[in-house]
Amino acid sequence: SEQGMLSYQLDNVYLIGKPDLVLLNEATGKATVIDFKSGRAPAIMNKSHSLQLAAYFLMVENALSLKVDRGVIRYLDDDNKELSIVNDALIMKELGRRLDDLALSKKDMNAGNVPMISRNHKDRYKCNICEFREQCPEAIK
Image 1 (spheres, helix red, strand yellow):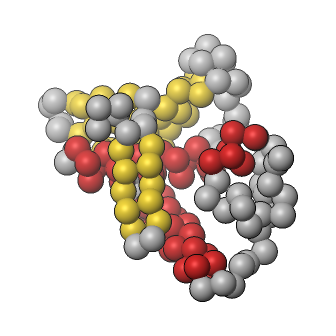
Image 2: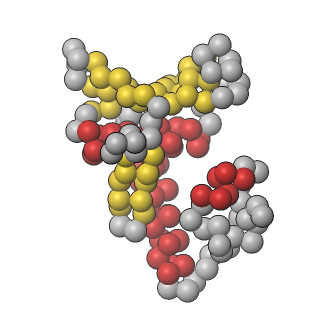
């Protein structure tokens, strides 16, 4: 899109995101997805960041018809330290499981079966954009 937003739909689950940078290696024809984060780098990449990159892999490959070989998180407040993951079957399988779980939860909710939802963060922004905010008893007000 004009704003650089990418999307991907699987059943009733929509992924929408905007990678900070997609670099194409013209020699190999493969792309690298880079996302910038503030703060200090953890010792190992946290799961939410690796799944965010995996979602970008899926969106970039679908929307831009590019094969993505890896993703990088660059921590701007930590001397641009980088942590990376490869785009492999393992991370994509994990993303697929998470998307399947989300699709099932949404289907249950649409049928009136509201699962127990608990907030796993203290971030008002994340809470405000969460599609489960209205049903979550722990939503940040």
